Image 1: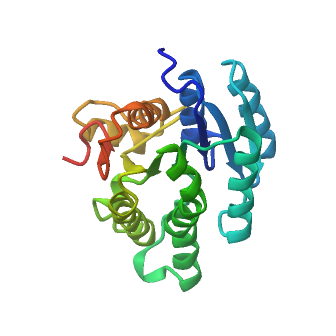
Image 2: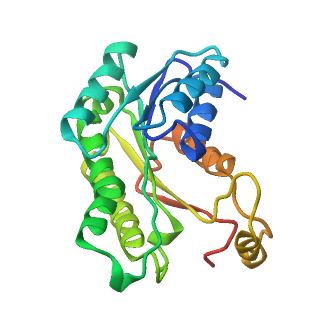
Length: 242
């Protein structure tokens, strides 16, 4: 892989495992120094940092409670202090839950939005001066559920739809210094696949479910594409949403 991100610093939230980890590793492979955040997955975060370092880049993990403004601001400050700059923010951390619409409590609704919509806004706001100085980029991780209504995921779908609109608003408000784009993954699986997931693969035009690496490749595209590309929503679903 060309080292197009050499000298750049990326911050990926919720990247101790799964999609976030794949994104962090792909950015490191591209030459970026990478900071990741975690909340409860310290052991996995430390292992991911070791894996990142194998690409010959600098890496660090910061415990961050994305529901807390002070924790977010301290995290961004720590990353900038460590690396001296911030070029790319990937708002990956998210919450997912299946609940019948009529059974969603106010607490569940608020918790979903706190992680999936409020946190990306607060993280981007904290990173804004540093990304402005670097003419940097923001990549938000939305969802196919933010484009299509899933009956048993009302609070999740609504929070991701809000994140999609937030991405466009950021792109317009913070241009021309910062480019902002959003990725909407479809059915992403890891490890063994249950019969339910096989059903989704059958419904998908590309005849398979997505992987974390598929999402990471999309993140790398936005991280290295012309800065002129902004305000876009890229669906990574193998055609499932068609």
